[in-house]
Length: 289
Image 1 (cartoon, rainbow, N blue to C red):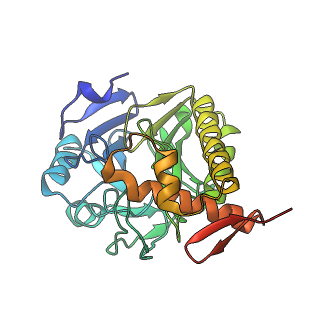
Image 2: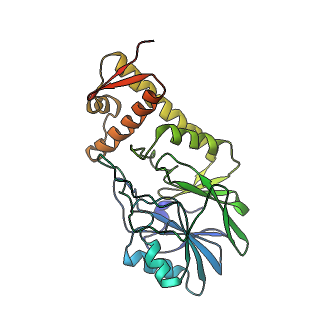
Image 3: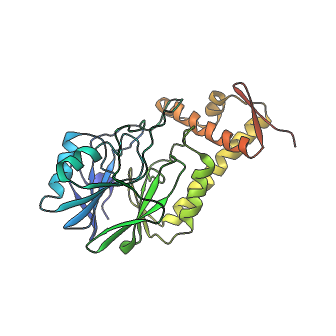
């Protein structure tokens, strides 16, 4: 199976008999080498996560499907590195935009990913368990809120593969940024994936993930470790998020400091909702048992 460094931006790479991918030219500290758009099927195809509204990337998708019909354009969520190409691709092909629900919530803090795409307007929302299909392929929606409240993964039934968007990425943990990002929902969604029988994950950023249940278990363990760090810091009287980030994220790229703070906040909100901590202005503290 081809790895990320094996193919250039804008060229379709065949991964399996049913899956091709095209890398968008939007690398950043938050998107790794860029957003990966996946093409599912042959003849009558679906495009998963069409990516940013970049003319070159849209042209690359059209080149990759020359002589074929793009029947569906399906987005896992509506951050601007995933869904804005849906509309121009629909205009060029007449395809139906299906997948996640629209969401235009503004965030209140610095992001480690892209802001929400206000232009996204699906023709149809795929609810949990609903499917689209073509010749020899079926994509079934798996609701996975957490990274965003509208996030869905898409299961390719015939190959037991799961397009995981930003819920599970190979190169980094997902950002969970309140108020829309929800740590409790994110961890529950990871638990959900651990109970499935997928054999490979195709994330929007990073290499395919083999042994995916083990990988999801590792992500869940990592989040629980972060929670433990927070509780230990609070027990020592360290209750301000910037100071927590300094202790918890040694050697962090300074450009990602804001994102780390958002994930710490998401953990604190989860702990508050469980009755473990409380907020006192900008300071968080343990609630005495």
